[in-house]
Image (cartoon, rainbow, N blue to C red; front, side):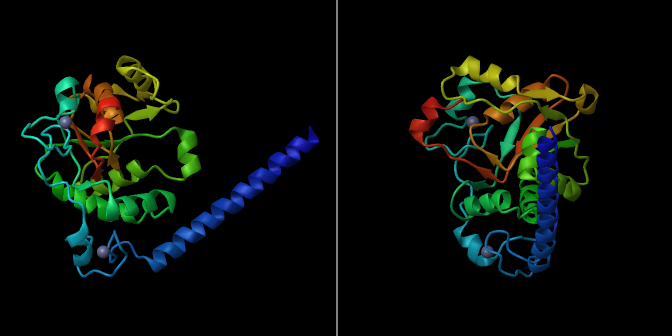
Length: 264
Ligand SMILES: [Zn+2]
Ligand SMILES: [Zn+2]
């Protein structure tokens, strides 16, 4: 008994030390990389961060999602269709999604670093880019895809939440946690379409319907992959909200063979 108490104390001490170390590293990170003068993709100094938070070099190389795309989910499409196969087959609970980049090259590298290397300062630049892309959208409220409390503690921050907060500041809109994630998402691989939907629906809860009642809600995420999670969040919110919109920094363009098996 005593031994386990001692162990617990030891772990708590270790955790505290780790938290202090993390805070110090964030502080120095901010000193070395002030969040409003560096290109969000390569770290070079740039003259007008608030106009364009990336350098002219990166601009030439950025994988922009500006080709032919689905009118609903913003997925690049190779044929003459205006709505992609996924959106034709499955009901979308959001009106429109927008992601200015494709999830590859410089953008993928930057987003991975944002999450794994704790580069929280990048959220401001990402938010500036997204704000320009969704200009004119009529939104009352910003929200984000939540993490379980345990995962958020483990990761130390929720990348979607931080992005949503920065975007809300720019657009002068409220940012609220409207959903909660009550358990981790189980592997979807062995499930059929209906099972997958049920699986995802059981993972998220609406916190308070009054928060979103009759509002136009924007859900923010860092990457749109299959739309499965975002569509589930949109479905839950859409029971009470007016319109749901979705935005992210990057869109994962799926390969053809993945399209056939993936949750839609
Ligand atoms: Zn750059
Ligand atoms: Zn689509």
